[in-house]
Picture 1: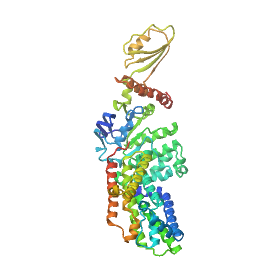
Picture 2 (picture 1 turned 90 degrees about the horizontal axis):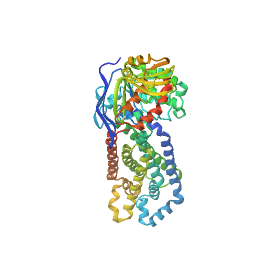
Picture 3 (picture 1 turned 90 degrees about the vertical axis):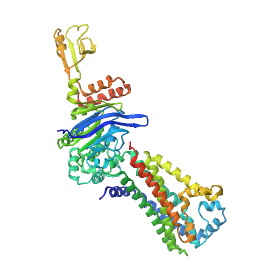
Picture 4 (picture 1 turned 135 degrees about the vertical axis):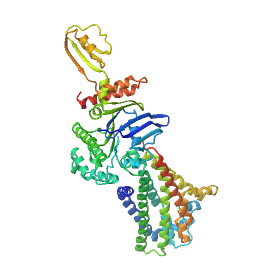
Length: 323
Length: 267
């Protein structure tokens, strides 16, 4: 789906607030029609990057272009083709949902009413709800409205910051379907999240940002392939005293139940295990959250606060993915 | 329809109730001024004339030519009620124009559309200006209804209109100051507090300059210095210089606001 023409291209992008570098020397290219996930815990620099893309923040140094245009100087031209879903959008609560969508659609130009109706159906936002003032909406309904306003004009680029906050799992799946359909039509989608499973489910490529620095940009499939799997072993009899195999790390031992991390080469481990009687052996491909945690723990400048926050968020990712 | 017009319409729609209520309130105030002239008018003017010059300066109430009714009404136009209502609206509208939009995050919805920042600001300014025109028009209407109802003699509606024009220019000048504060703020409450504080200081600068000869020279830095209804009654005209300075406050403030808002980050 993705074409070689970059839609988003950052070169040495840095954004500082005083002495604090929120984004530091970021190099990133997102191609046309790509669904790109931007991962990182709160405070890592995701929202700052997104606000630079959308023309709200001026780069301190470096360059960020969207559709080949400068994100700051040409922001009005870019926004003709942009759909934007901010993190904490505060809607005009005195308006009805219908009034807000009409107003924002008119600002974008063109007739969006037909597309809006389709989106409302897909996200189960009834006409009766749209006729009510937004101040009476639940958080989830406000989120649906925010999603619709970003999609209703069929943008060429969709930039979203934590788009699934407040959506129940069923609506989330409908939202993902809409995103996939948009991508099929050629829309480039860039979204940030700290919910790893949704990025894993949706995206072809991910960028992982930590403390303002991009620590990895890879295809999700490649990440999984290159990263270590988890093996759970139950020995039938007394387990060996130790396993000395290159590329295999013992994570935990609980009597006959062992948990191991295995590199890309499974042969040596399987050969060693074949020498023992086993009750059970499971090999799990690494989830994105495992990979993500590895990136965070591998760094030479560990950020314990970020790691801690990430570990707290990981269960949520598992709940959604059912892992 | 241009995006600026859409934002203007939407903003005006959001302000229409407060504009309507304040306009009616100012109409009632002007009507009451007329209604109270017979009972208090002459006594008030005599009282003002017997007051120390400082107090007269506070209300810019040093009367001279013009009918008693016109002088009485002119003092009323500088009464704290219309001054506070007008300044309060300007402060609220200008802080709502940018700082409050940023504070509540709704600016991201507006400016993620192809809306130039300058157009957004000018649309908000235009909406506020409509409110100011309505206030002056309703004050004029209230004056006419009251004066007609109570048979005030010596009313000159051409001069009253000039006073309203002077008041409109004062409102625009104040908005130049408050818009420039809003343009650099990300907190609506702070923008309101700062704007209100600066306006109070400027009001007292004008007062002090009128009462204390040692600081007389600083009076012209305050836009309130250039709003003097009694002087308009006395001369039968509004000073072009005064209107020009007030316009310069407005244009200068808006220019600064536009530059700041165009260049600033919206975090």
